[in-house]
Length: 292
Image 1 (cartoon, one colour):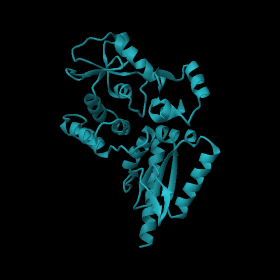
Image 2 (image 1 turned 30 degrees about the vertical axis):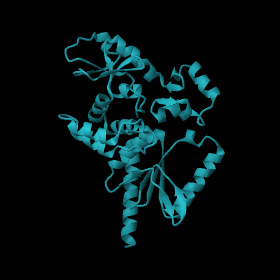
Image 3 (image 1 turned 90 degrees about the horizontal axis):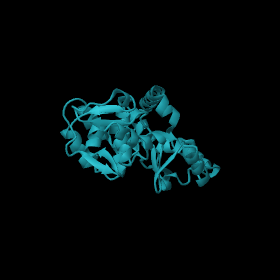
Image 4 (image 1 turned 45 degrees about the horizontal axis):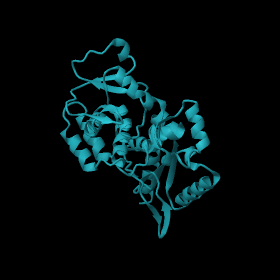
């Protein structure tokens, strides 16, 4: 469940391999904690239940639920599925309590994904970029790029967006990156983008002379700050842990400030993460000023 959450609620068996074994996966399925959606594709229960609830509401999956149906990772699996109905459609009050209801015109913007009525790729991108919190929108935008949507197309869609949320849509499209590894990392980048003086790039190579130090999650080359979206499950074993220890020590010895953030901190306490980043920027800026 932890691995699936960090991957955005949707993952293939290949993505899970090395992070959990077959016995763990089978146990999670038998306990109802993880759902096998199709051959080699696994999701959290909230993702699996969304189509049934959308059908009961006579609605179409939209926003975060549509993104997950398209196979994109989301930062937050909604407790109630996002669905959309036409402006004039009446929906029973009892059914409304089981979904997050959106209204809008859908002509030509509904597709069949695995037998489920879902907003189209273009409509899903537009809805998410303009209506979701910035961190969630960025995570979905990054995931869509990894799934094959071109950055040019995303920018075009955002540029054509009018009305409420259009400015955010353009900002998200501009900042979206195919290099982001998962929604966890995307949310950390979203926090960093809100910190004055910090300018990070995802998955940027670090070198100390001719020595390759690694490719951290986020790097500010000017301030020499490294940010890592660090997961216990990613280490897997002591060999992987020892490798990471060596890598981080080499970075510090080469003059980099390495900050490691856990999933629970990034998703559950973003204010504290932003505060640490702000203090770190001040520390490094003052250091650079002192050295001329």
